[in-house]
Image (cartoon, rainbow, N blue to C red; front, top):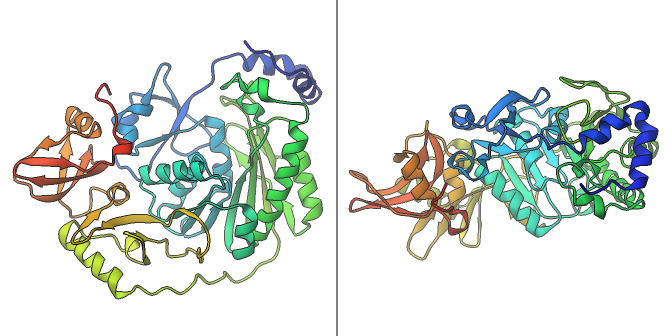
Length: 442
């Protein structure tokens, strides 16, 4: 096993004292693996029951995985039945406690574990802006939101200062899961021990302070800010929060209790791998003082072209839920449903403006994969329910045999979406995007 850095050992011994040996021993044990079920998928539990064991105490729909389970390349994962997420990483969104109808900003959101957890808590109501400054990671983030069928989120690709300059005091709550030195990864990814340097915590703390200052500007008076890291040192955790509060007296720590962990102290809480079943996490909850009327979302009018495209989509494919018709915009050859509360994004880079509804051809329209993932079996639409073997073939990109069907068809498995097919002459042509196709050995 790769040895721990000596400076890290010293800092832990200073913090934990007699508990330090148990902590170090925990880092040499296999990591605990977990997932979160998607409440938007009616049969998520039955689809995942072969993989899951005990519930994660602090996370709704969170479960530890059974030993040896590898669900990440299966049908249920492709259908968005769950999100694979380390158990302690579920703490931040649990503390944020998003409520349906709120406006939430996840400031450093990739790859999407916490942001899809927030989306689940919102239940399709309100607004979620998921931001990621790195373009490649923003694409991964958008893909995960799409797979989980989230209807009320947009994905921005911007640095925090660009957002705070445009959207001051717009959000009811903000999650800042800040880039950190990653000491919590020492068990899961032992190679990360060689990348850690004694100067890493101080360097990260400087960057975290800059991000938090911009985050403060984005939260409305009376709103809340949750800050989190996956590292252990005080410099990036309690000390960073204390320094932030000294710069921002309008914020105060807000205490809370977390099942399976206990009560916070001055708004701060930790997951320690020798105390809880998780790799390690820190989180703090802060409340911004004052109160103010919510800023209005920008006015929006659906133009005739967008309305006509929706009419065609509903005539050729299926009727849409109201939430996917509230605000429509054409971007190039694609039509998007933008979350109703979304602020003005003009001039910002977007990995996703919302739910992509369709692609516009010269003399045709084609329903988007994102639309298939955002729909559910309760809607009146033509569908084809696949068994396990058919689903594997579909995910591999194969055409399927079908009877008595014609035109665009919602392809599903156990009532959960996989994508689109188009039926003609007894054959279902496969319209799963090539980048999402999997091998037949599933």
